[in-house]
Image 1 (cartoon, one colour):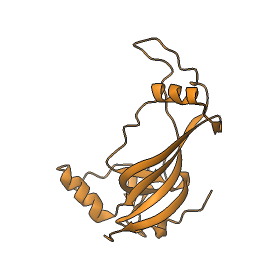
Image 2 (tube, rainbow, N blue to C red):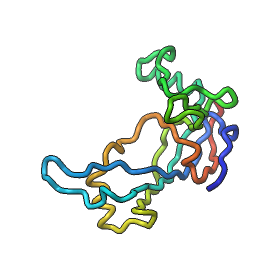
Image 3 (cartoon, rainbow, N blue to C red):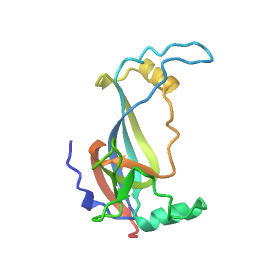
Image 4 (tube, rainbow, N blue to C red):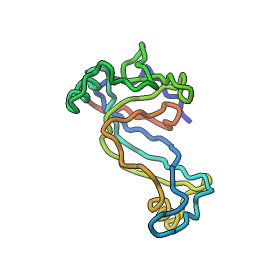
Length: 159
């Protein structure tokens, strides 16, 4: 895995990021009673996405569009890095000291699923999509730098 430096991100610039994350799935479907055959397996996804790095100005504009005020809206689990406003540092017990790139998602270009560290078969992919939870994507993302596999800087406006 590539070592991603938190100081290398520039607010407003669009980056192509490759990142891994665990897939959360239900064990069964309540309505149909269908059981998830992959419930006890380790299922991960590798995504290639475009993300626009977001500094303080972008965060403030994002909140304004939602009709929220920047004061008092910061989630309790992170604080903005003093070195780079595109980076947030976890403060909760589960995230303490972990660095996150905050930004605006600009689309997923590729998605690969893995079951127990091997590529998922087409039928396993169907099962994953049927039983996975969440995945609606957000208007604003926080990507853990430790989960980033690669980052390529694109073009974009400086904040």
